[in-house]
Length: 158
Image (cartoon, one colour):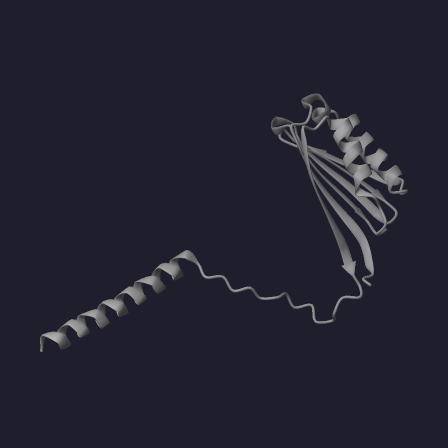
């Protein structure tokens, strides 16, 4: 059985309501509502904005929630990270979709910090042949076949 430190939920929200994406209050309400569902009140909220994006991050005990809003694209990316492994990501998705009125949401849930993992943490190596290498290999094979064919023809003509 695996023993994970926490869970990281990544949400991509497409086709959001422009007024909601531009609303600082709506984005902060998402942070507080999601924080309630993971039973972690936010101790500090940090905000940053420029012409293209609005970033609001909430920090709580054993959790943080970050929302990156792009009003020009009607797109919002949200991250919910908690050190509690038993959270239900469906609640965060429901709250975010309802508040932003998103047409489409893609959610990814990642378990973080498997402390029972094998001590050898080297990544598995996957070898991939590039297209250029495939073309060069094919050219070499064709050249070898041509040489073999020419030598066979020469032997028959001798």
